Length: 536
Image (cartoon, rainbow, N blue to C red; front, side, top):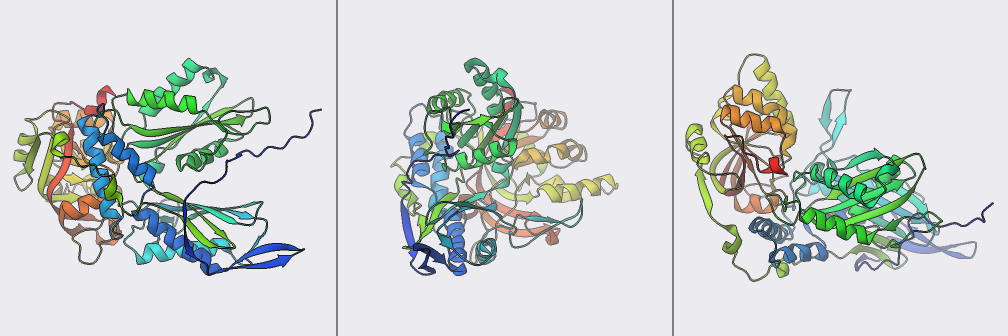
């Protein structure tokens, strides 16, 4: 029998995070059995949570911003790569003002806490954290995205972004440590679990497998990505939990080699191989190029001999997470970058913006389509005029109207359709953060809507299915790709007015009419059946 040899599953190195002190209040020290015990008041949890989600709605880590700058300084980056990186840095500068969040999808509020054994509270910690989530989402310009099921088929928005995902664990020590994360739907939807076998545990098979699966992520979650890959796991759910932690950089301090005790480790050599592979795919930062991913994390876990779960997930360009801790010295939070402008190099953006085709959306739809038909896919366009905004629930209602024989309303026929849902509008602003949502969720509506004379020009983010390409070829339609991840910049610079067109009871899912000026986009799918993503 082997000797007992305990090793933590995640033996992390010392925490090197740079923290800032929020307050010395709400903490104290008591004694129990001769040991100092940290005591925390509920207001400390609530205050920390509120501040954390305010910060990560508007601010990014310096390392992420430096990676964006690196794209602008890389001679191998395409003009499309550089254009997207420049848009992201400009967006970060606007968001850092603390009014417009960096992304309109202000996500599910996720909190992981690890409570040291020498910490005492004496209250419902989850409730105190949830109150902080409630406070920041109801008081600030953030979007409510949580849907409460009333029965199997009926849902209602909770109108406060609760419930949050709160996971609290017990560990050793005399501190309470946290990871706060905002995960939007587009990013979360690109998390995948594959139940594989040992057959892929050789270099050639594994790289072939990863090449295929990584391509299927597409661009709907706003690359460049921080890509996390986890091989193994004591269960499927543990594998996916590790994917989430790896995508936030929580596991960066793991050892870089394994041992017979079965702990997790990072395979940094494999990380570089996968990164190089993604650079050669040609997908790039949304519209072709080198920068599909900023970086890769590959975590190897122990596994049951009869199963091999493989998990893949991303943190998108709204790379929103931060670490925090409560100690006897006070409440501390990771220091995020408050001055993103310093990462903008002194360059002329016209160097990579290229020729831009201006499209007047005040024209009849036939004229708009005639203009777009003159240009190839990947052409950059600038849109000015009225646009109708409709996403999932609105499309379902329009389909019900169509199926009942009432036809589509004129506004769907006369104007481009933007798949989006805004964050709350700050006082004195024309719009709240208002970036595109994932186009693929509306794919099934395209052919019937075009056949009924509507939805001929669509505007959203990410790749689409072959059925959309066929519908555009059959009916003479177009899909334009907007830059995903620059919602604050779009709201401040391009969207001049926002008003409800129909279904106001749906909140952010209502059908809106917006006026835009110089709204940037690319022709992704044209009326001839050409599709930028078809070769990728």
